[in-house]
Length: 61
Ligand SMILES: [Zn+2]
Image 1 (cartoon, rainbow, N blue to C red):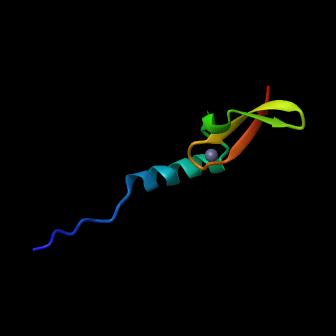
Image 2 (cartoon, rainbow, N blue to C red):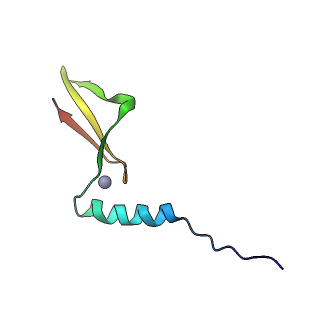
């Protein structure tokens, strides 16, 4: 007798919850370590990335 395992991914649920927060403007900004510093137009900026929705934000130092 095969045991039926529901195809559920808790991370997906958290992701949905996070996206809901993101839609309300509550992003979870973390410093993108791969490109922590990016030079744009001669200015040094810190690249922030939302760990939930992956949105990028450049913050001027
Ligand atoms: Zn977000």
